[in-house]
Amino acid sequence: MSAQPMPNPPSKLTVRQLEQSDATAVQQQSTDRGAAWISFRGSVPAGYVVLTTRHSMEFGGLDGFVDDLFVRPAFRRHGVGASLLTELFRECSKRRVLAVHIEVGSDNAPAQALCRRFGLSNNGRQLFTVRVA
Ligand SMILES: CC(C)(COP(=O)(O)OP(=O)(O)OC[C@H]1O[C@@H](n2cnc3c(N)ncnc32)[C@H](O)[C@@H]1OP(=O)(O)O)[C@@H](O)C(=O)NCCC(=O)NCCS
Image (tube, rainbow, N blue to C red):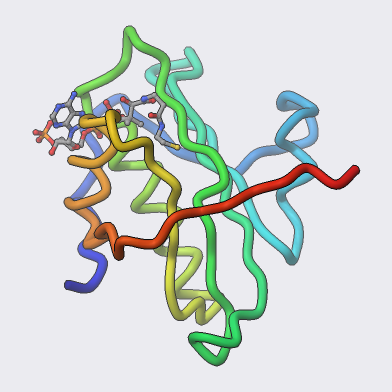
């Protein structure tokens, strides 16, 4: 199944790319190697998502990783996560990204349900990681 961005975000919900004035931990991600978005309900930050991209031998071009996706508990189930992913997929389309990946815990039912809404599915592979620096 291909990605199916959600329709228009709920009213009073805005999503924009990060700016210099935003938290330093994620602002450096708005580069040619990725981007990040923050969502507001009114003027209150509700959540954020970070995209990183790289060249993929498997797909023969760019692929993207949802490096982080978080919605503050009080704002969940109001379309914030879906709005953030919609912006991320829009940017991937602009950058001609060929595939999008996300790491989701096997016990994280909310994230799994959200991912399925966007066509992301479990391909049975496991991510092995070692910190090297
Ligand atoms: C996963 C997470 C980002 C979802 O954000 P959210 O803003 O609550 O999601 P949305 O309101 O946009 O939900 C969109 C759809 O996803 C699915 N979904 C989201 N949360 C769900 C839940 N708790 N149970 C079942 N389905 C859920 C539903 O299909 C939902 O559509 P619906 O509300 O019309 O039924 C949020 O729960 C979160 O930040 N969790 C902790 C961090 C995390 O797990 N991040 C993802 C892994 S990196």
